[in-house]
Image (cartoon, rainbow, N blue to C red):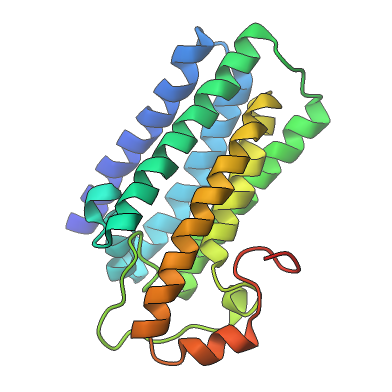
Length: 224
């Protein structure tokens, strides 16, 4: 029950954070796209997390211990600060774009954005269900197994792939093309995080060297 109560508190704070980052710059609560975005965020995050709370509470605990202060590697602290900043700026820019009409996203494209947000979040949640050691911080625990099947058989970092898909869909879902510009620095920061993480995994996780030779792509199949 303690894990559930902690998750509920963190979930409420996260939803409030997203709401403030959207509705304050939008200057109104009459922002239909933002409400749809929040609904998708809540649905695709809450239900899988409650499942984890019941079936795999240790995995949910690992996911809740995140943020810059939770990282043990100095470069990852910097990366996490940059990641949070990129997310906030993307939300704010998208809301300002909607408010001032800098760009116009057709309803069909906005719907595609909503689908991408939902798919990205579900991929990230499924990764945690498949790999209970997929923590929010860069760490290797004692006796941690190497997971190489399922989504891990497609790319070496499927959770980050899900996050990238979500970031592509977010501005579109929020009625903004300008928000897509934040993908460039976000991808750069993600590349730094992955490169440093793989260095640690190669050193500390048994079998990771062989896994790298079998699964060639880190993030996007066919690209990188």
